Image (cartoon, rainbow, N blue to C red; front, side, top):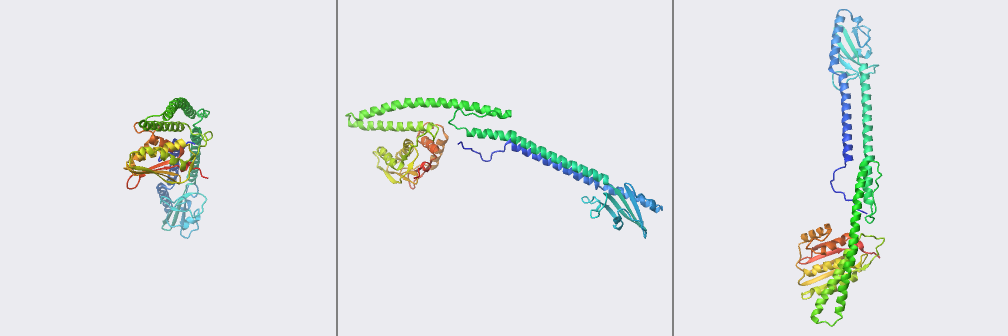
Length: 447
């Protein structure tokens, strides 16, 4: 199955940005409605009402001084009571008679113009002023119940609008998810679920939204071009396989015939190099053709390689490369190991490591060992720059084809490791030389 690579720090999708914008808009509207409610409460407690009560009280004081205290208005929006010393007259509500002089309100609490009367039950909302006179007290009230009712109505209306906005925002976010995010994710999941070996697989184009249909149709057009390209590559690969195998077989057969003929001894080394070159070319061709195919565990045979028996044979096959050098090829510990990989592929990978080690060793040794699923090739050569070697190996993994001038060695090893999940580590070998560690544990068959 294709692996989903998620780049770190990627930006959020358009659905997240639109949702965030809608949430911010909703919060802004909620703050505006809260500010409007706060402003209406401030109007009810505005200093204007205290000034109005002071003016009304002054008028009523003038009437009291003229001996009209008994005729003060005690019904309507503005009501007044003159409480003479020793008299029995009480205001409505009666608890106002016992309050100190000052301004009071049943709606006070935020702006300090009035003292709060919240602790006293009342039938309606009002502002009140209690004033001391030389021979009594004057209580004046201003009924604001109508304003309070309007404020409560406006608050309920604001709350209703807030609920409507919240529902609309949630509905838009849900609609975006259902009509934009979910179809795109479904399209992406279907795209990832396509089997690379199934060149006829296509995406459905029956999505209700035209935008998603356009993306699906464009993806299908791309898949069609890829399928045609793969078909051409497979045809070319089949033809190249046949065309290359025939001359290689002819050369190998001719070399075998020449080996059975009485040739001068001076020609034997040349014939040996021809045979080794043909064998290497044949193995390389097998590896390239194998790696070019898409892996199919259901149809490919389960090839098993006895790794601990193959490594000594590979060492013997490469001993001729040390001819004329004061160096030796040694076998270290070889732990019995079986891996589910074709032998030709293993020969390609290990042979490349052996040839690199021998080429860099003028004197000393080249050792090959096997332990815990790791093939180690160490030499006592001139060493190398580990940073440069690691860079070249990483570059070989990124390239779809070998870099011109660098040969097939690292490219083939990189492709083999990528195909079977192996890892290759190249490091200094101590005081001198190099150590290459090929970890094949991903293919090891456990008994």
